[in-house]
Each structure stands twice: as structure tokens, then as C-alpha cells.
Length: 298
Image (cartoon, rainbow, N blue to C red; front, side, top):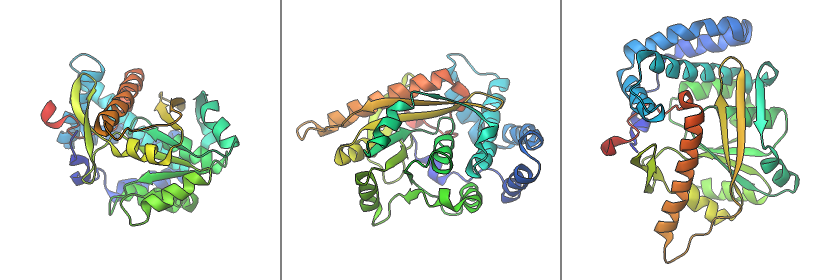
């Protein structure tokens, strides 16, 4: 897995993002969605790296060479979920048809005051859970997140709802581990996306969609350190206003042996990669990693 996503410039101008926010807040979802086709055209014509990355992924997910219409649909789903984040962040979740699968996996542990880890990916929208959980269900959720300097999308969304902004524990700060540990120990739900390798990551090699690539080992190591249940979460966009929110118990506890720690890390991350591939197959246009994901493994 490449680390190129950290160097890749954020697509879309600050003006466009501000316009999306203004339109969403003043005109509503249906009129604002009229700007999605021009955004897709912009990506198709001007984002060659993202276009290549989409084709590379889709040929694996669809098991056939993708056509231009497949790539366009891929970009459309991405743009649609970005727009929907505005409505979710301001708490306007009632306009969505959200179908929740096996919520008891999480809610039973929350009701017992048991801390846990939610492990997701850049597949669909994690915002469906985070926004609904904070503004509607009052779930104790914080998210471990790498915040790129100057990231316009995050700045605009954070300004809409400071409560959502305050739910982030930034990665790679001196007190990151302490903050996360104390939050989970108090019964909090700690979310993380485990499908990207960054410059600080230790990695393990896993097979994903038929090709080896690198996955970060940090999420599994952290879960083992905290010794709490790990729950998978995928908020899949299904078109129109529908989302499917899937919860799945990954492990009650993760234990890493001293003698075979690296092997154990690899086996756990391979299990994660297998479940990620499962949900990618269920919703192939929900994959939002628009960079050379498989890198030298091709």
C-alpha cells in the first residue's frame, strides 16, 4: 500500500467546497445534488491520478476491466458522500434512509459502560455513525484521525459543528496515546480507519482483492494494548438517500504473543483485509482511496 495519499493534494478548490456548504445549508439536498455531475466531469477530465487509481481498484472489485461509466459512478459516489457529510454534521440525518444492521453489537457494550474500538475504512461514510451517534444517540464517540494541514474539507465541516470537531483525537501528538487510553477506559467508543499506511506506520503485508499490499499494524497493536472489544463498522452508500450501516464483532479481545508478535499482527490484519474485501464487493463504488493503493505489488 502506497503512502502517496499524504503527499497528494486535496482535490477541489476552497471555493467549490464553500459553495457546496452554502448550497446545502440554503437550498437543501436535492438542488445541491445538481452540482454533482459537473464535479464528476472535473475529476474525469482533470484528475488523471485519481482516474488511474479508480480503474486499478475497479478492475479488482468488479473482476472485469472497468469502462468510463464505472469510473464516473465511482467519482459520483465519492462526491455524493462528501456532500452528505454537510447534512450529517449539522444533524439533518432524518433526510436519509439509514438501515442499521446488528446495532446491538455496539449498543450492548455501550449500555454496559464498556469501552471498545470501532475499526472502519475509507469505504463509504464513517460520518453516518459519528454524526448520528453524537448528535442523536449521544454515544461517547471519539475518532483517532490524521489531520492534514490545510485540509479544506475538514475545516469547513468542523466549522459547522464544533461538537463534531471536538470528537477528534489527532494522531501523532505527544499525548495521543494517553488521551485515547483514558477515553476507552472511561467507557468511550474509539473509532479509527485502518486501511491507509502513513509515514509513521509500521506495516504488515496482506492479500487484498487478490494482490499483496501493505496494511498498518498499528490499529491491531493498539487494540491489543487497550484489551477491549473490536467492532468493525462500514457505512455503505447505496445511492439516492440510502445508507447501510453494518456492525460486526471482530474480536472480544486481541492478544499478541511475545514469541510470534509479528505473525499475530499479520494474521489479525489479514482478517481485517478479508472483511474489508467482503464489504468492498458488496458496495464496490464506495472505495475512496484515489491513489496507487497497491504500489509496487501491482
